[in-house]
Amino acid sequence: MKLSYSSSDSSQNVLSKVCQSDKYKVSSNLEQDAADEKNIALGIVPESYTTPSERLEDFLPKALMLLIKIFWLTDPNIGHRWVLWIALYLGSPTDWPFWLIKVAIGLKPDLPEFWWIGQVSRTIWGFIAVDFYETMSKYLSHDIFALLGDHIDVCRFRQPIKRIVYLGMFCSLVLGLLIILLLVFIWEWIPLVDRITLPLRLIWWETSWLMIYCVFPGGIWAICKLLKSNICDVINAAMEFVGDVEDEDLQNIQKSISESNMRLTKFSQTFQRPLVSLITFYVYTLLWYPLNEFIWTIFYAITIIQIIFLLCSLDMLAGVVAKFARTIDERCKENDEFLSFQNTVDAVKLCGVRITQKKIWGFFCVSVVLLTILKIVGI
Image (cartoon, rainbow, N blue to C red; front, side, top):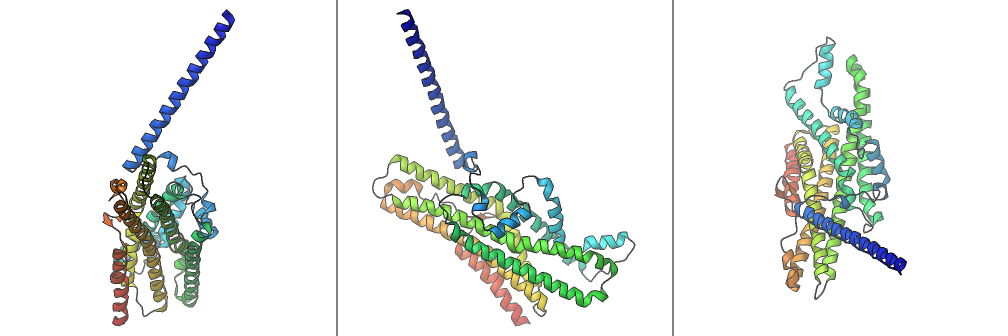
């Protein structure tokens, strides 16, 4: 009897310890869920939502993924990228570093009239390229994994990105060939120092063109497409509920909307400076490109194509956000339970300005179409 009593007593102790440990696990899980919901509401990305459970290679086309690996865009070690910073900066058509080299070796560079205006602009362009590169690297290394999942139709997702990347490669190749042909014709009049540096500068130019014409527009398109797919999932989830909605379902919808807003806010905060800088500089270069020379006409056309790609990416995202807001408003009219979600849909904002489809194409008509017409008429 004593033995049986002691064994039952010990089993009760074990059961009490197990129940107590289970209680601790449940309470810790509840605390973690509450902390995650609080972080989402504050716009902070929880670690559970950004764990790279999906591989980027399974979603992006091979051409873009190859360029991402070549340019170390997903390499967390920033020390490996300083060479690319220099290549991107010197890939801009800036001349003053090479003028300094001439001065250092005792030569006097031939400075054109008002040379400093062009050099300041080209220096700014170099910093914009490096800034966009670092921003893209940061997003592709961490934040993009929260957008990946089985809900994405990979084949349809890859097709437009492939076209953008291949077109960018074609533009880079055409520009490289044109520059080589031009150098062949004027090689005899090029000073010796410039002959030495030109092959290296051509490599830097090609590196910069591949990044600007392939990786930047292709990467932005991919990110906006992933955000659109994510928002479409939330729209479908909201449309599925008809009639009475349970509290748990409402909480799931609210959590999905909060996550969607969080990702839109993250995209806006991450890319607002490089996107605004890049598009503004593109428009600025359109003012200066002369259309009476073939090479500059090619640059003019490529710049317009790049502006269209970037604006179409933002238009795609602004369109689905507008559809999301309309869906929530319609659900509010059908079901009073959705009233708490009214006016909760966030939007893409660049420098505090809400981006809509009308604003995007109004900007394009004024800054690109009207400017091009004026330049053609002026010729």
